[in-house]
Length: 430
Ligand code: PMP
Image (cartoon, rainbow, N blue to C red; front, side, top):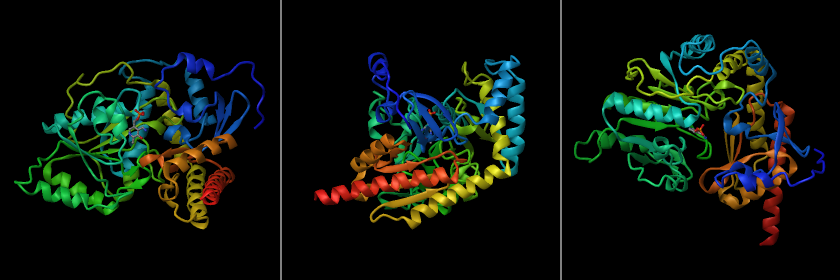
């Protein structure tokens, strides 16, 4: 982790030339140069252990050799890179393998819609399709949710600061409390059942209910399985499209390929992005259940709906996903982290473990101010970790799924030590 002296201030060009909208780089003010696995190296030679994994886009780590080699070979053979939504051999292989290896074994008879390049594009498509399918316009989403920041998805994102930036009313989405959260337990599904079965409730059946099976930006909260099954039944009764957003919690992040699997339900629409390409290449898909593909040809066009390199990378990622060694490493890693936080409990600090997503909640012991201090100190010490949730009071540990056990232990120890030392400093100052 040696820093080498640099001639000029490497940050200056960003301050001078990049828009004020930039965000992560303000919290982590390094200029990144290269990365492999769970290690990111900055221009000044500083090495970071990555417990953020591109906000969930790097579940297989940085530049995994197998995925990278497949992409390099495809490029070297002049494989088509841009093809609108033409048929291509790369897309054909992805569709075939994703269908046989991911969907069919889970009983999912969904078709794939290729959306624009980023997660919000899949959410936009899902909302639009649900409205077309039902002929209704309202959507129900949940407090603590994050679904993107384009016009339609932002309407379903609960963060009031983000919503303010829209500059227009975002009133087509109604929020209900997520059944678990900082405020405790809510009987949200029961409430909705009562509303929809009462013709004088004033509440009409919406086009869709949109949720994350595990809220990630919301602070790592899982939708209770029994509630999700009950919600599935409610949607069936009232012809409501159930949309599950797997953009961050999916692709193995919580231990199963899809986070909703553990609840034993089948959503009508599923949004997938971030880690689907394995290498961090932009790719975004909507999975559409049989009977819900109400699109007419050309209803939802776009130039970048066929990132061929991402398709090649996604197939290589599927190779890894199905390797027993990968699965074993993933299970062992998740167990290690969960055990670590059970054995090293800190008074007042709540920890929620969902596979390789661990929420270390500092709400009761200093909240966002403490979490911010810890994030900054950890970055200085060579660990990238994000604070999220209400008031940014939850440290969200999100290492790649194949991070070595040593690195996972080291990262958890760094986080633990930083919290403990900041808590001690605070106690002494009181
Ligand atoms: N849904 C969820 C659950 C997300 O976590 C995100 C991104 N954090 C999005 C949608 C939006 O994805 P993108 O930033 O790629 O548009």
